[in-house]
Length: 247
Image (cartoon, rainbow, N blue to C red; front, side):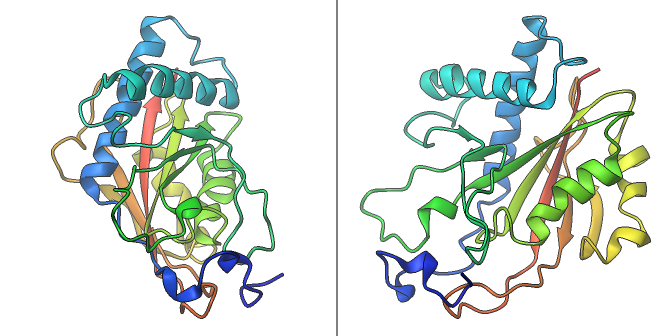
């Protein structure tokens, strides 16, 4: 199966959707950042063991708070059932050409679209896809976070129809973006990650460092694959990096 097979147009005409999908935009990114920060706060208040819990348990705990509390009750202004679809964890989705149909991004946030708005997206692939990774002595920023995380956005496993994606780090043992991620995204990885912009701080209100979380940074990466249905070459993707202290 490949991009020419019509895999993505079963039930929809190729001219009924556009690639790339529209940008989510920085306000949406920072809203989801506020949601995540509040969820981490609650985990700390509940004495959840962020320092020892495995990646999947941390992600599942975050989802429980986000979905069962925040989205249902509107705890975080702007994030509620009227604005967002249910947040999902490890939902199966296809990569960019349909050769792998069981890719499982850790979290996915989807905006709720106006029912009367003409649908010009592939809704299954429209949203903020989040890959979560522990970063500590056993999980280096290079081999795990970059080579096993960021790369999934670059090669079109996740968010292939989108212009943004998000990496969420469970940072331990004093790991930081400046001290560990930026050195890991060095010349040796510049080609494999197709980096066009190494991580830099996002200078916007709501992106600054807060208790338990570093300032939001972003990097940009070229994607060297062709979109399906003759939609052309994939555009570059902006990856937002959110590092939370889980020591």
